[in-house]
Image 1 (tube, rainbow, N blue to C red):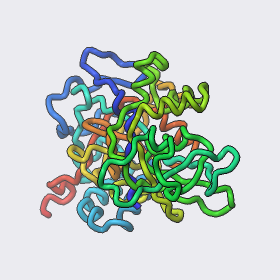
Image 2: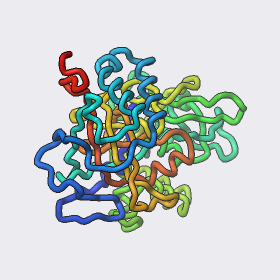
Image 3: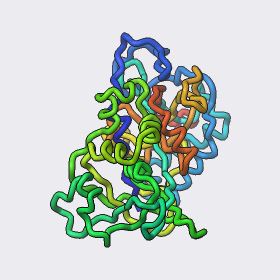
Length: 364
C-alpha cells in the first residue's frame, strides 16, 4: 500500500532563509559561499567525515531492487558505483575515482542551506468498539466520494455513518497526528500483529495549519513551533479545547485498514529509517541518491553544533515538501516520532550520480 505523505504542519511554517543570516541553533552554515546555480557539480563535497549509515543505505537499495525493477534499473549504475565507493572507505575526496559526480544543492537561501524536517509512522492504541477511554473514531473512506465530504467539525459531530468507523482510539490528537503522517499502525490490544492503516483519501476541504493558528493566537512562539510543541499544548488543555483547535482545520484524512505490511513511500518501496526521504520530485526524482550533511540534535531537540553524513534515497513525497526541503523518515513508534518532531533544521546536500566518463577505465 502506498503511503502518500501529508505532513503539512512544519512545512507551512518554515521561514525562508536569507544570505544576511548567520549560523543559528537551526544549523545554518555558509562554508561554500553564495552558490551561483542549483545542482552545480563540485570536484568533491567540502565536508569532513564519511556516511555513518552505509548498511542502512544498502538495505534501502536492496528494497528498491526487490520491489521495483524499473526504479532500480533506471538508477542501477549509480547504486553500484556508490556501493563500490562505500565498501572502499567512502572518502568524499575519492568520489571521482569511483565514477561518481557530486552536484551541490543551492538550498533555500542560495548558500547551500537545505531544510530538513522529519516524519515517522505512529502506533495508536485502539479498539474495534467504543469503550472506556477509546472514544475517538478513525474513519474509512466513504464510497462514491467524488463530491466534497463533510468538514472536520461536521465529522466530529457525527455527520458520517457509523459503518465507516474502522476503530476507536484513546486520543483525538493521536488520530490527527496519524492524519498528518499519512498512515500508521494500530494496536488493538489483542496480542495480534499490528494493523496498518494506510492513507485512503481526504474530504476535499482546504488544509489549514493548526500550528499557524497557535502562533497567530500567541499560544506558541513561531521559533518554538513543531509537532511536539503542538502535542505539548494539547496535553495542557482539555478535550473540548483540543477539539476546537483541530476543527480550525476543515481537512480530514481517511484510512484503509489492512494486515501488517511494511511502511512504503509514494514509490511503493518499503522505507528504511534514516535512509529515505520525501522530496519535491520536480527537483529530486524518485530513486535519487543523496549525500546529506545533517545537523545532530540532542534528546531535547537542541542543535549540538555538529553534523553527520548520511546516504539517503528519495522515495516519498509530501504536500509541504517543496523546493530545497527534505522530510527524513525516522521509523516507527514513539521514539521515532519524538526525534522526527524536533527537526526543522538546515544542512547541506549533494546529489550523487554515475559519471558519464569511466575514469577508472578511459578506454571503455
